[in-house]
Image 1: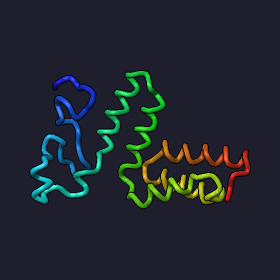
Image 2 (image 1 turned 180 degrees about the vertical axis):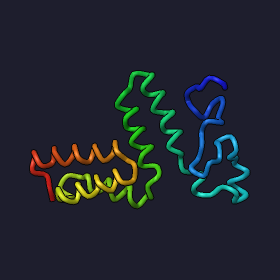
Image 3 (image 1 turned 90 degrees about the horizontal axis):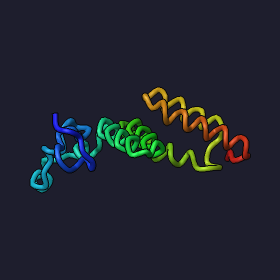
Image 4 (image 1 turned 135 degrees about the vertical axis):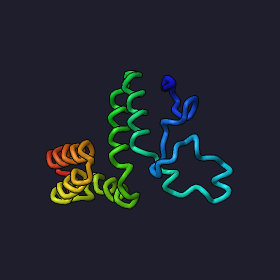
Length: 132
């Protein structure tokens, strides 16, 4: 296997996948123009985000790596759900019980890192009196 290089879009693109399973090397502008590329072909696969996280970690940026891993967890959720989670995390927008419910929903969907982040936010909001 060829050595993985950054950015992922240059060099061997066979390890970059869309959620449809199609590899980046299989997606062309001609396919887009012909209508042969669907919305799911444009959605990043969590494995690609994990590769990006590996690069970030190797470059000495563990915070970015963790954000990319959380993004990988969220990649499989519907866009409306991700926006709902984001909006709920804004200070004063949710009750403590609502954040607990979101954390449980995230955990049930396999997003353990994201669930832990919501629980951490809940603790900070409680300490600062930021519940809606």
